[in-house]
Length: 226
Picture (cartoon, one colour):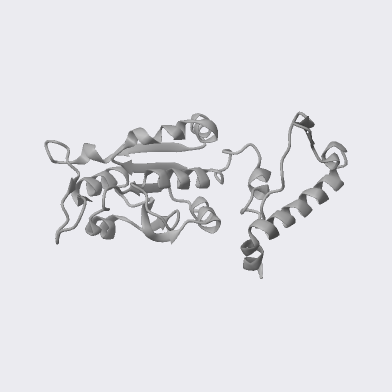
């Protein structure tokens, strides 16, 4: 999958070169292109924002640099184009799977300041997505959340397909507690069942713990199944 991220602050995306996502890029399972919107500005100072018509606080990103950047990245409109916005659909596991199963490459526009000129959204963007009911200073952090979540479903990114099936939320339940060495830490021991080597009993314990934690911490998940 190719993911193009359009932003005024490309330096923020260094995190995508780390850990699982970084390895996936290095191994060729993902291609992530960070596109600097400022490079497409026709202003001699590479200005990309201006005061809003009608007045109001803050600045609004101008349509021309964004439009030209989008056209450069996706001239034939073959990408799924997303704008990170508090007005959009709230990001969820079902949306993650929807995007990941889309055969198109992904283009993500990051807004900043007081937002983006509506005309370029109407001309260029397919949908708006929010990662929650709160406001960030820009779309960059939200874009990284989308990239990280979607990338997990790209073949080859994770070492095992089972990882996605067992994860919290994706499975419809919260994940069971995990433990590693040492078998005792600060006087607290790992549950004996996990040391037994009896795989069937371990699986039963994990399922029971998963159900218990879901009922205790996120009962809404089981309610959604009804």
